[in-house]
Amino acid sequence: MNDKYDREAARAYALRWAYGRNPRYADFSDMGGDCTNFVSQCLFAGGLSMNYTPVLGWYYRSLNNRAPAWTGVEYLYQFLTRGNSRPGPGAYVCAPEELMPGDLAQLSFDGKTFSHSLFVSDVTPSGIFICTHTYDARQKNLASYTYTDLRPLHITGGFR
Figure 1: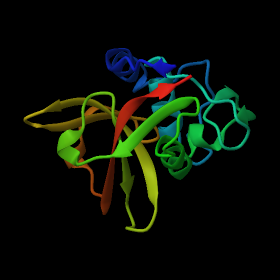
Figure 2: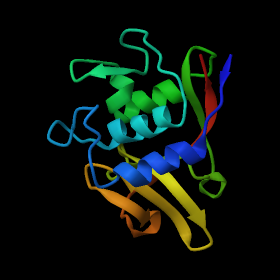
Figure 3: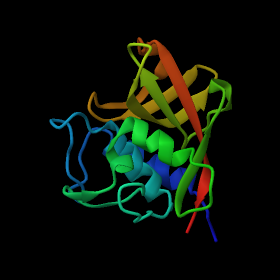
Figure 4: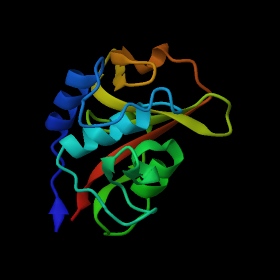
């Protein structure tokens, strides 16, 4: 059964928690960064189901009981683009002009590895606006970042 992705609910969550930390989740800011944890929370708030497959899933139960894809930039990318109907959210790499509120962007600062995940909160003629953690931002223009490579990800929904 397909999960309906409520982009507006995910966006509302991102705007609410961009400068705060939801106490239901650990804060990974001092453990390598909180950006992908925050993005995963936004997707979950949008109604997408967790996938409790050990190691290869996408879930969060506690600091010590979570999948790598919940908090790791590359692991999340691999999970989202896995191309099957196993539970959890799915996505595909899109052109930047295809991004919509509720989508994600990942940044590479060295041209080799992607190391920062951002939640797309708005798309206007003025630009793509994001919310993120680690370097907390709310409604920040993506164009204000200095990066080597951009990986835009369009969320397609999910499976249960």
